[in-house]
Image (cartoon, rainbow, N blue to C red):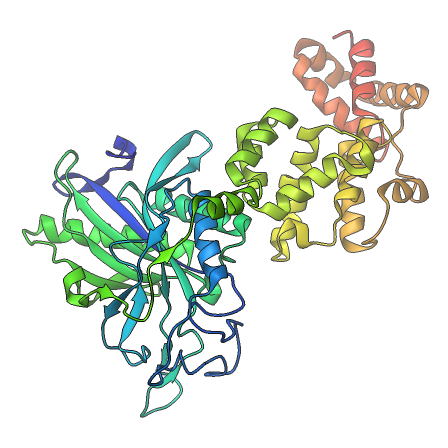
Length: 495
């Protein structure tokens, strides 16, 4: 695990270097049609208080009944985090008063969670990989939502989220920079989406982060931590960590001490501000929920869920490297989104033909991804089909078109002919590459004849040949076979 930061990750203060220590509590909404202890719908975007059962509203005498699918989703997630699955766990009442918590307590898990220790491998950069320890994963119900902007005099309460199942995934304090924290949340969200246990939509609140931040001198004991609540985007997580670390360093360097507290991040001002002093576990008066028996299942049930798991990101990345010969970076980019990985495999093997894996990867992570970003869609949700990319790569491979012409064909597919077959586009628009050596030789001769001064320069400095290639390509409308042009120039110039 990450015990100390690299020197490059230390933060320079006025009085020397500091190390930031980060732990994360991720609240992930479980993908299920109904809530954790009631049959009410979890559909997002409904009218306020439309998805509320008598249990969610805490009407007297209403008893919770566990949702088996939510339990299965938590176990699947634990398996995806390479974590210990506890065959016996206990639901507790976490007591606190808040207007959007109708019961006056939250049903959660404290000492006996459903999932214990695990580990997540995170690529921070193409050259750096870290392991982040998972402390636990427990199931709990969400609270409702207080609305303060609907009325000038009153606060309103929407209980649609009340009782929705959450997985709280608690990391160990293994993160040492905002970059590591962002990469960790990105990887965790990828794993959850592969498994299908959480959709990871931070903008809808189905994935939220509480970020624990402390600073210390390198090698010193852990400092006092502050918790930044409910950060709802990966970009804001990075900004919140940077701002809070700077604030704590400033306090320490001014001779003050850090008070353990809960804070909020204000993205508009780029700063954290105090919310309340941090509660300890005893403040919540946890005790086992008397309405719920301990949750028990057997190893056979866990094995059955394990057998139904999809290929997870790390395994898929290793397979892409092994089977397709892709560099680790390319494989990592492709498997970061399951649909993109599927799109890539569909393109590589379209029509039962195995084509150049690296060339296909270059097109998908380059031109196709650039277009997808420009329209705000994932690669697999654009109108560009894997079969069209496969056809482009085939046309380049058999010498029908050059890479440059292929870009022009893709531009036609994007803007004019969405369902177009690249081979037909090339035929009907006369975009075939010029491979007629006689035509290429004539173009080369014309350029050489018109530029005797450049000929002498190229013979003295062979790298100048690039200028001639450019001129020939221009004269042939970009259709000349680049390799044939190079060969002809070298022969004529005696290079």
